Image (cartoon, rainbow, N blue to C red; front, side, top):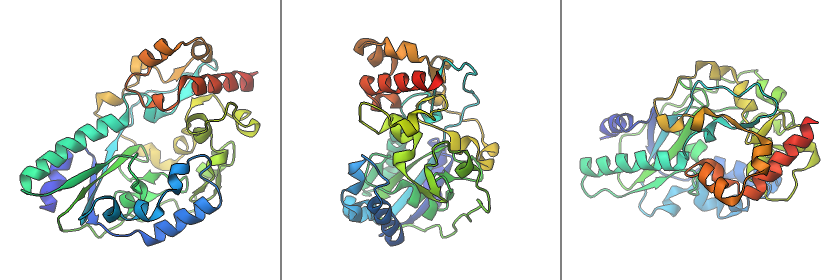
Length: 308
């Protein structure tokens, strides 16, 4: 059954798959609680809710016995513009909303698993579910947790989206994990302009450009970040761009991840001139809709100030 599920996952468009028993992630929960205790989650209050459920899928899906961890490559060969007037967008948001893309493929996969194993029940988890996606990817042998806290694979670097399908049946499980290949490299720590990676494997969201331009809901971006945006208007890929393992990236075969209009950035002046209708049309079915127009304009204004 496990071999068949892995084959089905590849056929459904996933590049990597691992299957492990559903259980409590005790060590990962302890580290999460330490991170929360330091206040490194900033305004992301949902991360505080029920760490027990977040670290144990059996509390989320009654009867869960197996976790099918999945990874999908989203890298495309496009580059950011050299135009200093263009605000850069994080690579993950160039195309269609990855939540929709992954969920659609996972629904297809779960449907095929249901045909393979009559009576099986399953639950799809894509990012917004209270599941520790990175921890499960590591446990399932998809990759290792890099010093920048993204999961790195030997095949696709860190340019992968993660998701899980919880199943209420026991399967044959993967036991091999991927060794941490970061070694003595500190490229991601050295490159972060705001020192958000406080130490290897620890990110303080309060200092992170990606957090400030996406998750932070205040009217202004703190000066210590806005002065060091380095051209980013939505998200930030600096720690991934400098990672040596991302030299091994491969182009995604998913047209959904191709930059809309071949654009990898936005003119801050254009953002400031947007009305609600233009915003809704421009970012329809885009992950960028997570940032409302008011906050996107805040980012654009901060970027213009930092460029002066």
